[in-house]
Image 1: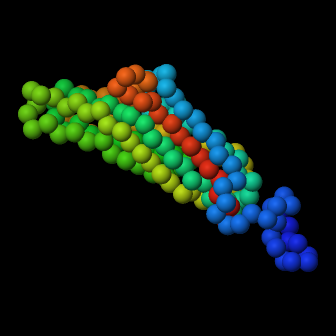
Image 2: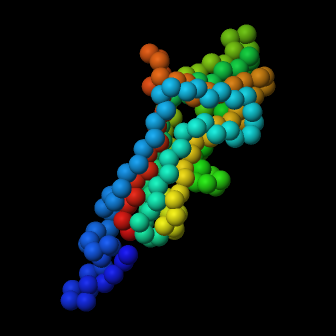
Length: 165
């Protein structure tokens, strides 16, 4: 509940004076054991999700997602996308692209990704953020995957921080 102290005029949230920019809560989800693979040109859920319930509708949510991906194809010009969505609304996206100059080499690329977004959901309801992937274009068949934790890949994580307005 947001109130105003009658004596000082200070705005209080649940009786506490939070300065603008204070971190109010942090939630995190990590996936080190499953693998998501797709050859679809439609965005697919990876299972990497986090849910946060803002304490005030004016709060900002800083979402940080990072991890490792691997994209491959039987030829060249393999192109994949990773996006961050709130509910079903895209709020951030990164591209993974590999272009082999000779189709006999095929396209293979292991690559880290990072998406950072300061969001304004304007709600006090639980808000879910998730990572989706797709193969968005290729001259040949291709797949993109979120690999599990191995000696070569570090897994993936997503974090949401509520920041006071």
